[in-house]
Image (cartoon, rainbow, N blue to C red; front, side):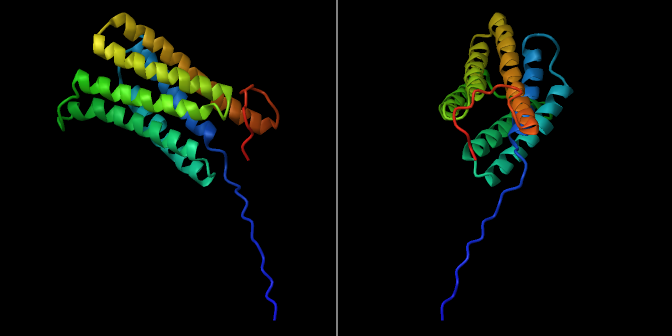
Length: 199
């Protein structure tokens, strides 16, 4: 007796999480760097954005990328969501008296490690899109400029870094909105310079 074998194909019908992750990163980055540029003080608005949008929303987007079988998106969004959560913790925990504040040397090391990590992820964007290449290249520069500003204490460097960070965050917003609207309209509304088309 012959037994027929059948193959069941499961179609992924979940939404594309990339716009959420990119917008969560971009908006929060712009707001933090408006502070770094000297536009306004460090305040609860930045910390709240860092926890809930830059942090938690990005982690959620990263977990959703795992379901899409997108390892790059998983690693990037969960990592940068965790970056925002750790940054807020570094600011808030000493103020609550839970632990002493990180030294300048520790913060410089922290920022350099994130810069190296981002530079390595930049290599992955060479297979994705020109817009993501710009986001990751400008973010790599941002981390190293932040480290330089903390290492030297130079206010001009810190102010310049703020403006560079605004450009970085704005590029992530552009990429996120472009990805979203191109999908909604089924055509290119915002050119992203796609290198390969992912299924």
